[in-house]
Image (cartoon, rainbow, N blue to C red; front, side, top):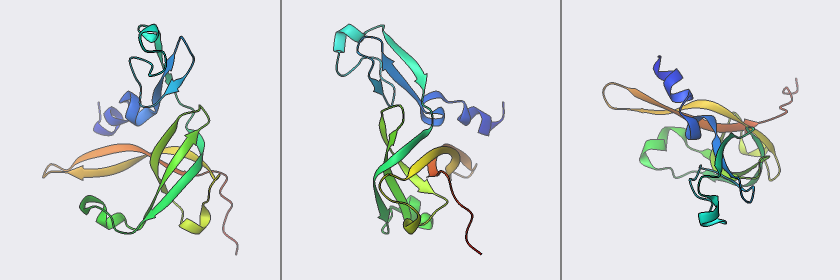
Length: 139
């Protein structure tokens, strides 16, 4: 199996899998073995579900003073996203500039390279988000 395919098929982080409580119906990301609301009643009743991959921006920030590993990416946008499935997560917003987004902007998950490490150049993949319904630039 190719390395990119291996990373794409890692369930929760790379395919946006969550857990749904069979007792109360709450969805949790990242997945959990026990529901934080139902506790013991949820043991053995948590099911794995794949999130739809779309949502809207609840809050965002533009990072200008980035940690060492992200120096080459700055400035970048990081957002809290409410997925249509009901969970909230934090993720980078890509392929647009700050004026192109705002609170309520609809976004979709995309699979991207996050970085690489070591002399062997092991590449890490993960999810990022981009604007949906992008209109072509005016001429």
